[in-house]
Image (tube, rainbow over all chains, first blue to last red):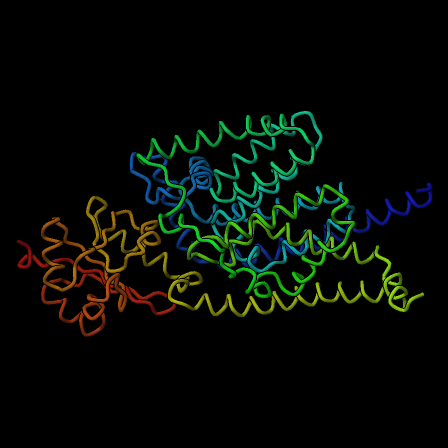
Length: 331
Length: 159
């Protein structure tokens, strides 16, 4: 790339950053306008709020199968402000907004501004991501730590493996099953790097946090269960619920996700493997549950699908379709 | 027009139109969902004041028996413990349950019960029958006209 082209790319990138910031601010305003309309916490949110109270009292946990991190955060805020659920109502959506920023920063570094804009926009504009992130629930919190796991996994900084491990542990603490997606990202990264030691370094960061969470819950309630018993039954072959409801969950853009896999370019860049594995493992995991299928379970792997959709668009933009038509015509 | 550009424009249009359709489709379905029984309170600005009024009426050290088994929502705002009478299937067994546990407060969410057997007792007609054994302390209505009734077991019904 010559100097002129480089300068043009930087200017374009800055323009897209500016557009992203404007869109992000508008999105945040709409997001919080919706949050302000909520007069009541959601039913599951009530469990987390009561658990927060129980964590700092001698009472047993109201719902001991709920992951503890969100309740610890609530309890921490309560210790500063007094018990006030309204503060929590406005605090929790911050995690999804932060996840959006991290996604943009990460993809901008690796794929450029337009690509980052596309993936972040598709993720944040997904109605399930929007709606469930406005609640006092673990959806936004776990999305944030999962995205942070990805961010540190792809980083080459000295301590990034350890930080990725810490983020993996926090993903587990925020919503137990999402740790499987975080593990997938880490394992694929270790394979890409061809470095088993990388996996050990990540686990060094993750293990203490996972251990603390399990021990804390066990000591408080006398047992540790990652989910209610019905949710721990898995089936084979997996259900087709998510694939049958693709349009309702991800919209027509989802059609492009499998298309991305048909381009040779996709398989030539090992960076893409993470998102392919993330999507497949998450889809298989949620589809393998025996009865509990909900579109909101797709929230955490929506960035992977958004990535594949935008990757398909990038591949289309760089593919020379004339070669195929010429071949057909026998030229 | 260049074939590559045409295909790219088509793909971008699918993504953008798909996303707009997805948002429009889900706004409608979320609106419908918010009117369902499970989500009925989300936008009800009077639910919390009602729960706080109930909390102020009942001494904190006394447990309230409640007809509805999703106790987490009221439990945030009511300081007393809330107990769901599992296994109870009639007015008589409700009285026995409360007497056995030495409980006197009953909170009824009108027309709603954790068990089918008690649904008739907690509807308008059933509540009249309930008043033979329970003294009505207060009736509360939320913004969306959901009704809660606070009762106390009459002393003659205590054993």
